[in-house]
Amino acid sequence: MNDGPIRSLMEPQDPEISVMSKIGAALTELKETPEAVVRVLRWAVEKYRPKAGPSPTRLQSGLLPDIVEDTEETSAPRQFPDFPALFAAAAPTTDPERALVAGYWFQVVNGHDDLHGQLLNDELKNMGHRIGNVTEALSNLIARRPALVIQTRKSGTSRQARKKYRLTTEGIRAVEQMLTQTATA
Image 1 (cartoon, rainbow, N blue to C red):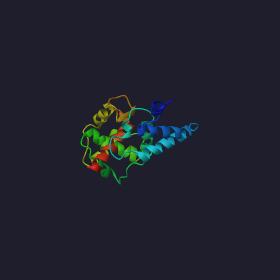
Image 2 (cartoon, rainbow, N blue to C red; image 1 turned 90 degrees about the horizontal axis):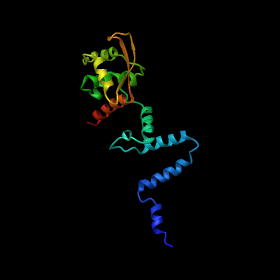
Image 3 (cartoon, rainbow, N blue to C red; image 1 turned 180 degrees about the horizontal axis):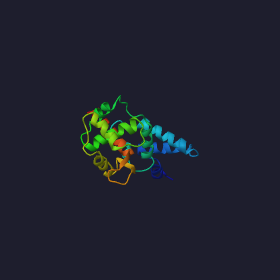
Image 4 (tube, rainbow, N blue to C red; image 1 turned 90 degrees about the vertical axis):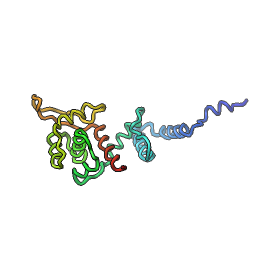
């Protein structure tokens, strides 16, 4: 009996499928420890991430985006000696972008939990880039989809009440993309 056609159906012809089968077999050894599976996948994503082309974070299915996000968030942000150096590296062109970069300075670089508009605008004003209406700029970032900033609290009941904000993961990623674009330009 000739089992040639059956054998060819069982053997992966595509190198990707072959590699996926090998990875699946290897990860089966770790099935009792899901944390180990995640560590191995994080390592593989970092080790074999393409240097050019679309970022794996843009993939919309499976476990990979979560692993990539976790890996990117745990990597150290680029170091800047001061806010003007970060601002120059990001080269924001609009008021919302300026507010986003200032928020990145305070939240990511300096570790502030919450931000308020006056803090951001004061820092921008010191550099000669004051925003006319910082609340409007931040509201613009909140309105984007996905939101780049969220409002975390509001003290007082009036329209002028002090609001607290925080950059979202997408907001942080947007600033880091600005930094990458200017570094490669």
